[in-house]
Image (cartoon, rainbow, N blue to C red; front, side, top):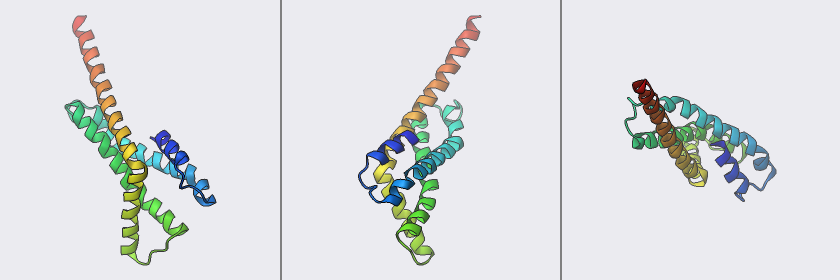
Length: 142
């Protein structure tokens, strides 16, 4: 997940001033940690045959993991934007800024991470179910 984030951020032309460019590694690490935490929470469901019965459910769980990571990442990122650029006054303004940051982060790179996460969910489920089929056919053949 972090590799997609790194590619998009380094290719994206909006990182022009020094503070944004120096924050790229921190933003990449924070996004990667958010995706790792979301994957740790939802990953067991993706590979479990009893919890996700088909690949479609695993794809949805992968997409959900990406959205969960977005929700985990948006509030700290909004606080960083607030500290660096905008100074919202009050709790409602901070919540509004968080929602706007989440929306624009999704539009900028979140959709690509969602597609990658959905593909990872599908491939993990497929790998887990193929391992179960192979091990059960090996035990039956012996």
